[in-house]
Image (cartoon, rainbow, N blue to C red; front, side, top):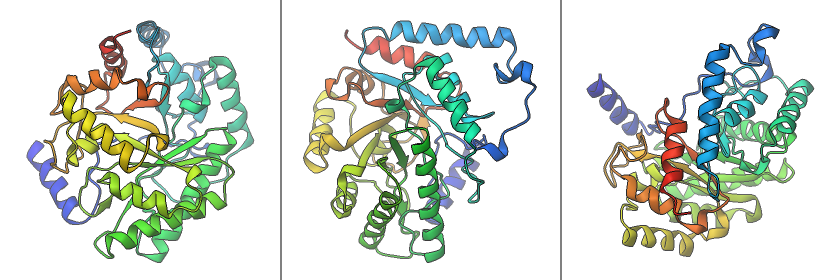
Length: 349
């Protein structure tokens, strides 16, 4: 099975597709795909009381472990059953930040966001007091903001506008997305210029949301495998106050940035500062890597169990420059609360 997966990954790379181990799009998160839920069970989203109590208990343990920390750990949470469920799920499992999809990212076409969605969202915010500036939606994987194909480019731009407008209705301040790909049909510089033009297109049709470019692993024909790629795009954008960067630790490691020891870690951070600038760092995706350094393999691993190792995450947790920034885990599912507690314990408080 493992060999089949690797073969599939390599074929996708050859085809210019992004091989990703990021959160699966299992849930439909806008109103038209909201499942019918019995009102008596809606509060627990289908969980038994015992399951709900267990989840909230470990969430309380995470928050207790985080006391005294300025780091904002979280993960990509499910919004199945309604966008507001993402807030309840995040709070129940001890998140200080989180990512979500603001609509079903498996399809291009969606109904407008219903007012009840907004009302339920604000009810959840009031009940949990979750900070809106720590919520970072992830853009649809269908999109290619740098597509050389006119039809795909327009569909991508329209989807980005729709997702950002939905986020703004919820008072979310940031929107993270994968920059795009040449798909082997145009030059890299042309693709990066198109991505900048896509950002301009979205900015002109939204109010104040910041579009956050994610660092990539350098796989296939993807853009964003180097800090220089993102710098090029930022410099081309008309209003660079509306653009930012999300560092993905697995992606930069797979792209050749070694953060495993103090010397190399500081060299990478200094390079980021000189090439892009700290003011553009809006979020981090926290992942270990199944692949080797400079492998261009986008395969996430649990914290401390991959090729990056615990030392890098200890340095991240003790880097004051990262205080207050959303740090969102995208490791394989199943142990997010445990991983957050592990990371908080790495911090010297």
